[in-house]
Length: 271
Length: 133
Image (tube, rainbow over all chains, first blue to last red; front, top):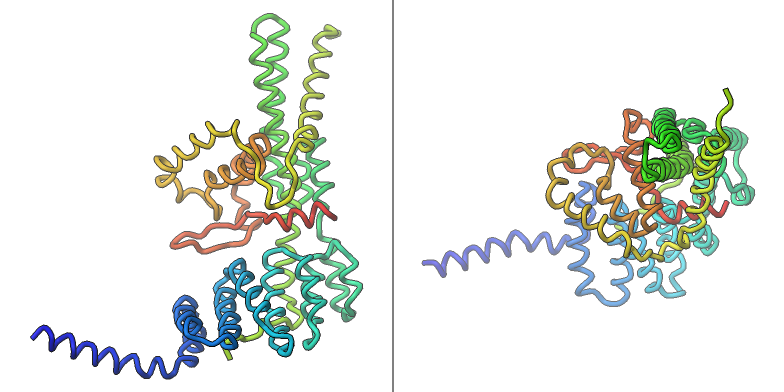
């Protein structure tokens, strides 16, 4: 009886899974459309395992694409790099489409130098949208922007963006001399106020401790400790000034790109 | 009316200590190469304390941390990456200066399970980009 049940179950499973295995590619497409990237990846890995060398190249690109859609750009980068190595020299168009998507992940990972180098090696696609995106991410570095022709409106917007950006080094220097000034310059006023209060309070305590030490009321350890702790908080404030400018710049750039993507889109690797 | 010279000298010493301390520490930091990790012999005790916190207390307080990588994990990784002084200073920056009501307007939002957290990680490549410009 139990044996019969197992056989019937096996037949049912086979009947259900047969159309799925036959539709293979369509299933992956469907899963990607439904944002079920992990399930799509399982299907793709099954294909990858049994595929020929030529098929493996394409499957690896698709696997990388699912990672990319899921927001895992680090793994997507690794898979795309492997896929690029696989692709033969006679398949330049496919290699370029992989590079195109890889550039997107590199930009998301803030690896601008690598992205710039990779863009130079794309020959069969118009890389203008990519270079424009890179130009926004590296708005402080004018050389890249000079290599692409922006429209008058884009130039105006980029100029406006550049004017809004803050200089992290200047922010750091401001915080070094006036605690919290760098954060305020970088539009993080509450952070700046907190830094000013903490470092200010630490300085006051230190002054009181030094005076008390000179009056003979306190041991040397107390002023040394308060000065050391205040100095550490002041150092944290200097680092904070530097980072606040970077946070502001990155936020401005991301907001800018969410409004103006220059027609940049990921290439669909599943089709 | 006039302060004693030794008091004035100590105040000058105090100001100098603050001004000198920061650049000296910046200079004493390790290379910014992303693959470099710092020996943290001196930070072992702190790291153990942090580990203890994560094991025993962290789970009860994690819901209060507004950032994507929890503060204790951030502390641990910055100690490993930048050494005792800079690692500690970065943690102080996050814990004392940046954790406030302006977080939603300053950082990118991220859904983590049933919680909304904010992304404040700066990649090595981004820091390198800013340091080279």
